[in-house]
Image (tube, rainbow, N blue to C red; front, side, top):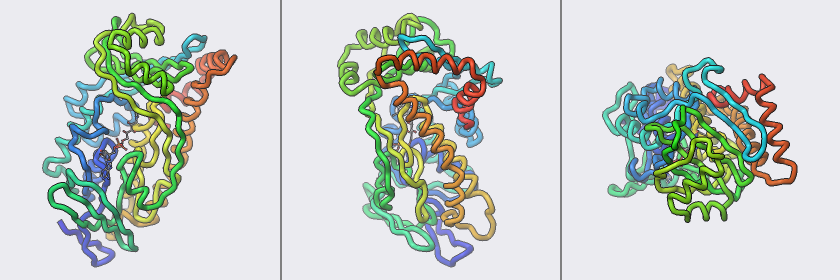
Length: 407
Ligand SMILES: Cc1cc2nc3c(=O)[nH]c(=O)nc-3n(C[C@H](O)[C@H](O)[C@H](O)COP(=O)(O)OP(=O)(O)OC[C@H]3O[C@@H](n4cnc5c(N)ncnc54)[C@H](O)[C@@H]3O)c2cc1C
């Protein structure tokens, strides 16, 4: 459909061009279309091939889950594929110190939900690739790849390389870069990024625990990195084991039984052992942050804006708050002058998001560095720090708020 701006007489192909149809691009497309914007999404891969919708499970905080629900994304199959987090236990392997947060003490049904990425991918696919459900409409360019864009005062011209149709040029009012940590859009816009190599790799699998997980999410800090054991549907658990590169290589090479045993030993036998692990996937971990989340008629979102260490399960949760705020800002003052790329709106969005970025990136990075250093005496300090969480109500409340995605 060709859209005419009420401000200028120029015709635009779409209001918003989203580059990248992964978890973030997909949810954003849904949010904006529900508000009546016309949206186009460029994605090179089919959903079952996308790295975003691979076999990982994602812990979504309660607030993020409620937001997905308001977007109509939590249908019965997705709800059935997810497991409630009723309690979070954080401890430091080999030292004293335990912090515990329960849904009951927080006055909620669940602190969060552990969801298979693939289940969200399937839900998004059924909604986005089908006929439009709201006022807005979504057009998919797939399989297709973003090539370049050119920005002028009124809009953005985007060149898209379709696998079958060749080069296609589209005109949009706003471009959103949701094309991952190595974002080509961000690079083309010459936006600065900060990178920190953690020298760690996450080894990810699911397994069946000998004792029921009871909805408890465990985060076990070790000197090599954290091991998360998260409750998953069907009685299984999701394992995210972060270790230094050489140790991760060793973990990747173990047979299933030896891997399950290694997890159990590190985890202190809390669930009586593990069996039937799925094939392991590994993710090298770096902190990549765009120094600015907006530029002329451009918003950088998701991994393209901040690819975080998975230690506190904050990455996608932060992305959901970005999406919610961007949708809100674009929705506000929608009158005759319909321009989602208006610089004042983007400046408003930037101002809204910066404090959350500082807080969340600071929390995640601080946890990685504070708990991964193997220094003499630091273990006791770490144990002491965690015990303090139990005694200090304000800190604990902050942790609860972060866990629930409210922060
Ligand atoms: C091991 C691990 C565990 C995690 N666990 C959690 C968790 O429990 N809780 C949590 O909140 N977060 C978690 N995260 C973070 C979460 O995975 C990310 O926040 C999320 O994947 C961000 O999605 P995205 O769509 O921005 O990026 P991506 O998943 O990187 O997707 C980018 C998309 O852009 C597409 N693309 C790439 N290049 C182009 C191009 N040129 N043109 C068009 N499209 C392109 C790709 O095909 C892809 O579909 C975890 C991360 C890791 C690594």
